[in-house]
Image 1 (cartoon, rainbow, N blue to C red):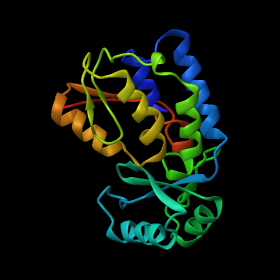
Image 2 (tube, one colour):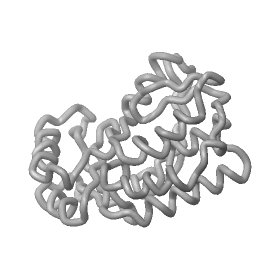
Image 3 (spheres, rainbow, N blue to C red):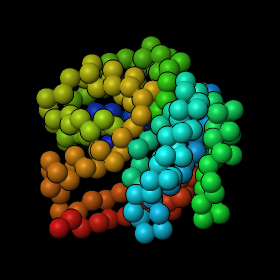
Length: 207
């Protein structure tokens, strides 16, 4: 739920409303259909692996309308879809490091069209008044920058409870934009959670 964390840090969600929105979205998305799994797109040397990339592309093609690219996640692909499509794709992909493909426990088909019912409910449940102009710039899952103090609450609500829920989240693009546009001295990664393989955050110096 990194985007929601970012909204809180930037002051878009404040006070009790922040917990209301985060817990509400967690409930709506957890109750949604489908599943999610992760698969590497790089080799042991962290170089792009054309065979792995082609294998993932083939599964997306074979299960069109049922399997989707959920998160573009650096050297990994996070795919989401129906239970059947996810199971079949995981069986078809070659095992890697005796770990992948790795099913993410407790995950529905996040960041895919299968989440549309959850998005529709969220749009109806949460009013625009719960959203405020960000006090810090934000970069969303499309790589788009939301400037501090200039962003309209209605637009933030529409994206947060719409495309952000139902479309591919380009995490890699967001990091690329952050580095190129803001030239930070260092990056602090607050996750991911244990289900994606991370156990704690990390901090990296940028040169």
